[in-house]
Image 1: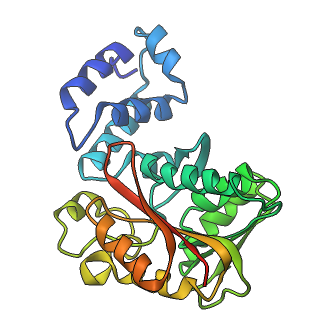
Image 2: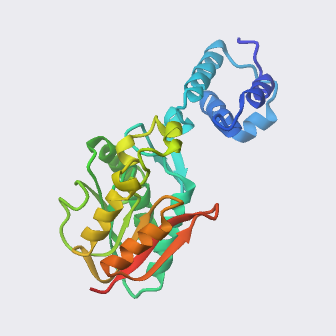
Length: 279
């Protein structure tokens, strides 16, 4: 035995926790090590960790202290009520991206489209494409990503979550895309190379985070290219940085989109912009 009880580990977690190492990460990692849920931790303060369990717990703490997110340690992350597998080849799904899902679902619910066709550019773990496919069972979803490793994770998630109406194709944005779509969605790289927040994200794939032109280069390319792949009356919805709302709206309007609007995330920050293409 390790002479370390759940109670003493919780006390250590409170002492160790910080902005960079939040308590819920430490608690989540303890649950993963023990293969127990939160209720078990609450009800069994006197449970004594084995030496192997304690060693594994402390090894994970060291990795998180170096900046590695909990999601990569446990290999999964919850998103929109489902659990997605993740690894360092994919971004970690974040709650703010759920606003993109909600906005697209709200827009589609107001349309008269029986079987919407949806394109997700830069699928990563597949959380956006698969969620839309599951929430819209009659839809036809195409998810593309240039990363073979990310597509492998997305495909695994699609199979595990039985998203049979979601297909995965390797493509650098529109390069391998054919046909027209009722909706195009994307959470592209949008962080400027000089952004100070990048230091906290160094374990995640930089190619999925960083873009040129103050973080707008991929967004500009998607907006410009989307008009060749959207049906008339189709929706384009793009996630972006908290300080990019005005710039992205201007790009939409300059391209000729109508009904352009920026939607805020749960923290009250500009998080996504959408517009309708009428040709």
